[in-house]
Image 1 (cartoon, rainbow, N blue to C red):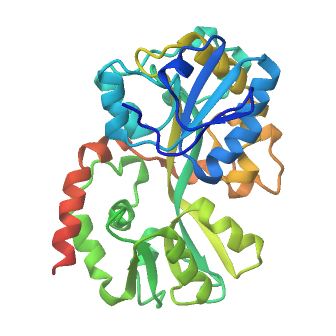
Image 2 (image 1 turned 90 degrees about the vertical axis):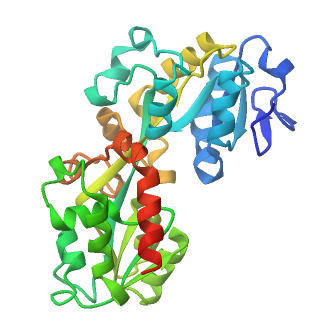
Image 3 (image 1 turned 30 degrees about the vertical axis):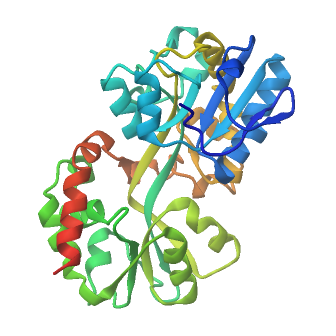
Length: 346
């Protein structure tokens, strides 16, 4: 079974191949890295994967895109085609609970790599890399003095105007919960039905879209005045001088990790790659081109002052938000989907 959905490249050899084959996976001095594709992986390739291949003399085989269910089956059946996988926190939780990930040898990593990593991010089965954040963004011409909180987002009298968010794929349940309970430290658990009742209160004052690109475009066109959005989606608009800004108050951060699948053919080589990429100045190289913040706080010493304020985890704004409880969200994903379906037919 081959789970990869887009082309694979053998970087050190500079030879394009269609998919990671069993033979390729058994090559000597090779590490096979499976990531998420798009601009994100293109920058990983430029700043992490290719430089490591050149520095180490090892072959780095890169694959992009995967289906979580297929990834899980691949590991369960022992037909492991990747040595390292870029995973979200909820995927790490799910796979580690089933015993499908190799433990990270934290003792093998240099102290310079680990001193700036928050204790709760030092996972037994995953190494933390970047994080993105769900934030509020708004039109500064419409609202020169705010809004400041998610309660303000729901206050259509004090802040009249249209709101925007994606709908079915990630309804703003946590934001609704924070509008009712501003104590972000105790956000979880929250009552899902109450959160959807709160969302329903906005009625015609909120426009739901299928994707974030449309949400941002509505803000840019003036069709909505404030939105729920991943931070990186706002950077192009801000760079173009649009009258918009990010409100970091009550933001939620979502971390990503590198993990080694159980039975990876080159787990030692995977750890060698982690020992190289983990240096704060190396992690920092991904910040400006992707708008994702490094989880290692020491990396900010290598990030330009003009870039840092737009990144989640930036020391100046990190205390205004928190890391999302992805374990709780994962356990209640189906309930959230069902509640969205019920709200949609009201």
